[in-house]
Image (cartoon, rainbow, N blue to C red; front, side, top):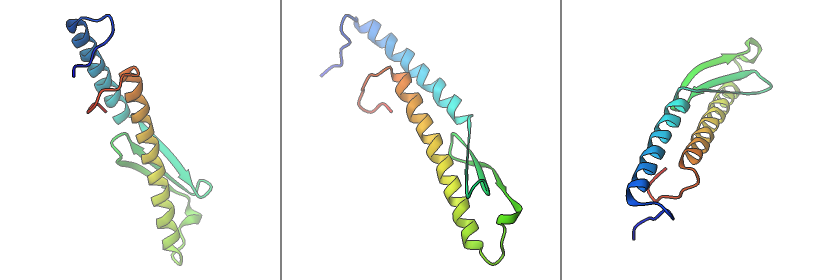
Length: 109
């Protein structure tokens, strides 16, 4: 079964798909170069990740560093990192949806 866009010839459809693909690549690159910052513990731990889900910066408030409670610090870092990754993923999903212009094409992000 072929996908059809009402009122569009095959050439028009291919051109629209190519434009959509270019827009999606542009959006993906923009998001990959964007940084997402999240903080937990009332700002005690702040983590910045990029759109590739890589940590690029971690800030710790000095009072959070307690040698007697390293586990809490580790948990806070993980929570902040995961929140940053969630923000990056949501931005990518939203950007791809906008680039697709509402089209639902199997196998396309």
